Amino acid sequence: MDVIARRAIPRPGFRRNIRSLIKRPRSQPVSSLLGLDRKDGRAEALEKPPPRPTRWQILTGEAERPDRPIKVYPPPPSTRSRCKDPIAALTRTQLTSLDPTGARSRLFAKRNPEAAKVGDILLVRQRNGDPFAGVCLNIRRQGIDTSILLRNNLTRVGVEMWYKIYSPNVEGVEVVQRRAKRARRARLYYMRKPKHDLGSVQNIVSQYLQQRQALRSGSARGRDSNSGKRKHAKSK
Image 1: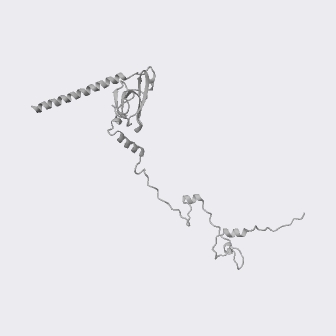
Image 2: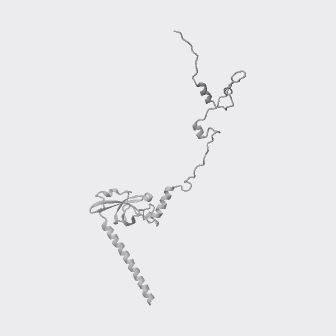
């Protein structure tokens, strides 16, 4: 079988595609771009173009593009210069609005020696609801979310209540009776057992309220007697 050698025939449109890829002005011929001299027909060596920069080099600034410069904008103003700790600033503003006198903050401060501690009997008065008294089992100091856990026995059933001391519904917190000895634990959950349970603290709370009422009535009588003496002295 005879093998016929055929000449490689270029694909149709091959030259047209090459010419379209070469960017040249209309006045300049293609032969000058390819390095051909029309007089002698000899080809000259063209310099190899520099490699095109990658996108990463363009973004990082390693490669300069004079045709399309990257505009660099200044950074936005930082809020850290005006307020370094926004959470602490917000907590302070809320504390000043909810506790303007600072009495509740001092009552549950760690560095205050006269602060309420676990094991004390506390009385919580509410604006909407009955007051509740019980033994303090736990104190969670979490800024504006500081809360206490009180336990009491109502009709021989153990009842525990969580109260947030900065809540608008809480009218006041009073220390009814302090623990005789300092508790050696931060959470007195062992008092839930029948062996260590104090039971109902209603008798202690009622006695505290009676003494408080007597002191108030005595001070009111003293004021009335002093005012009567002043009026009698003026009449004379």
